Amino acid sequence: MQRVKGIGGSERHLLFLLPALADAGLDVRMHVLVTHEGERFVDELRAAGVAVTTEPGGGDLNPSLLPGLVREIKSFDPAIVHTHLVHADVYGQLAAAVTRRTGISSVHATPDFYRRNPYRTAGRAVGRRCARRIAISEHVARFVRDEGLAPADRIRVVRYGMDASGFARTDDERANARIGTGIAPAEVVIGVASRLIPGKGHDVLIDAFGDAARDHPDLRLLVAGVGELRGDLEARAAARCPDGSVRFLGFVEHIADFMAACDVLAFPTQPEFGEGFGLAALEGMAAGRPVLATDVGPLPEIVVDGVTGYVVPARATAGFTRAITGLADDPGLRRRLGDAAGRRAREDFSLEAMVRGTMGVYAEVA
Image (tube, rainbow, N blue to C red):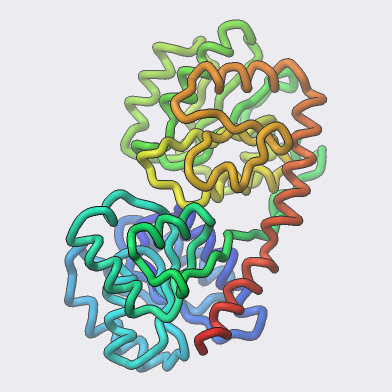
């Protein structure tokens, strides 16, 4: 159960996890509280063969959700009610209590709102009610423990995993992806794929890229994603980067093809965002690309500095510039880091490991 307004990291996680749980023999149904563009997520789940029910998510404070959730639980009759994100946690776990079902909650981020009331009180109440609280990284687990969002003995870490083979591309497929994106053979492309919202660090990346591109005329920056800051970021790129070196692509449907077209993937998240994992960084590694990431929260758990990419201090524009320049100058280095990134994605963040971990938590409480 989750409240959804689009497809971000937690939604992409569920698009990997839920079909795999069904393939493993579990009877899975997803109930989506739909807002904004949440129907896109619903459509993708159904295309993956997952049973989905929906209802309007409404506003942040919406107790009218409770009767519908209670009816949904009674109709499906699950052994476990597993909720994701704060709205589903509050209303879904309350509905689970009313219907006397075992509850599990996954925590996908470390948002500041949990440090103040009424969110802290609500988060702690959910944590006391749930039999287990799954954290998607060690960083999130520390946050849940430190903020009292669950008793320490109920916290379990199950890291995001994925089928990395879905991001593998042959040389011909990569060449076609570059042609389709309008990239010339000699151009070195830095890509970033995330929502254009505060805290994602696009401003830092644009400034760093602009400094690097002045001495490297073949450098290009491709920005995939939509969000409220697009106009501001386009103006920033126009002011600070060489003409034509930055392109904003908007929503990109086939993200694996986008990543295949790039030479390097950047993930410049800043501390204020409250990143819980950084799935796009893992996807970039699965695509066999070196990843430039900040040293924020969970990202050093994913990107190994100097092995699968580079980890740069947050807001360190000069550090990003040096990393971009070094990778632009050395195609052999890009290949070595990218090959290591692909191996790490396949071996350390597999879909099978995530499914085993999730089912292990279910087995503890079922």
